[in-house]
Length: 534
Ligand code: NOJ
Image (tube, rainbow, N blue to C red):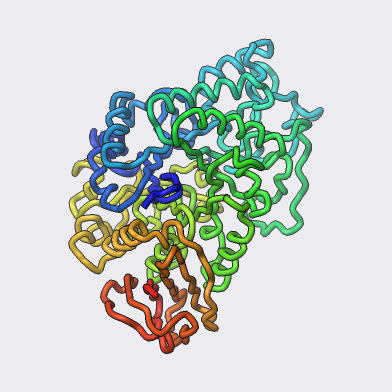
């Protein structure tokens, strides 16, 4: 099946948020031995790779995205020995392991920053971005943090400000200093030597800032909601020199056999595509977040899929994402009735799909009572917490109907509240129900992995003449599949006889239909998705 393709092209990536997958030691926080215990389940989802959100030592001001040591494991998650055991088990099950690399910033407790802030004369001073106060004593420029407030914090002791686009405790490294990149490459090498298969690189498009630190202009079209987006981030993001940095990272990966990196990049196609590199010498996959960001409408989605396909550089491998630890749960965004249609879309489009843990169960955002809110953007900006807060999509995995859903031992307090519906929506219940969301998901991933048309075949949109429907074919050799997705609750009859006389149902969201359907009068009921073999 794999032929000339790489694992990161044909395999499905499954993102685990380690704090929330499985607690094995009774602290209410997930850990590596816990993940290890659940690998059989992960494998049963027919995924090819597991991406772990950060597991490094960290004071957890941004739940691990503030790294205090790039080459160790937080004791909360386990030890390096636990990591090695996990990696070995992942490999033994024929899967790959991708670590989250957070090179743009460190924790303020990282030794590099401790040194850097110790004095203006410290050799590591220039490893971070320090500037004198503005003449009025305020921050050096108007840049803001994604998590609220200015992007600068004054260090009283040395009288300068340092830059951070996330929490104060996440000072940003200065990649204009070559020593910083060398150091980060060394940290990457540590994990590559240990056998990790790749990295998901955090905010890779932010890694270089304007050399002159110019003020950013106000966006005249700002919607007035999130203050960070009042400015157009033309000097803090997507700077031309970032590509030099990424090429060096890629060159390191290329010293090893079949490793990959996928970059977190929130940009429009034109800029996004540049991250493949002019010679395909940058990231293997620049994350494509359009299905998360666009309104859930059939024609909008069709247009964006067609446009993305058209914009891809020849030879660039596509990818699609429906959810991650920064975005509200897909089942909440599109509505429970559309959750299966959404997964069918993700898993039948051309390109590597990335799935977020729990979406296979149909997990929804969990309402977090104010006293339990932990995520910094929500804590810092209570008035927009319901929009920017990420706790609702980070709640514990729902394994069974026992107290704490099998995530943690009964009596333990999980770090975030469990979903109220966990007794019904969980792995045990859904595994026993052939028509459940989980059974559907498994059937879908099994279909994808057994079909060359779905994993590597061509994509072509099909006109149905119906606003609510999005249909397309996937073709490889003489295998040809038709996918029809109904984005609404109404039933439609369509004529697709241009594609042939009939098609055989291989999978439908309802999990009940079999047999052949006449394409001249194809009925698609509300919220239905269907895959037909032509
Ligand atoms: C993007 C990560 O996905 C997010 O969770 C984190 O808060 C920021 N980068 C800062 O590292």
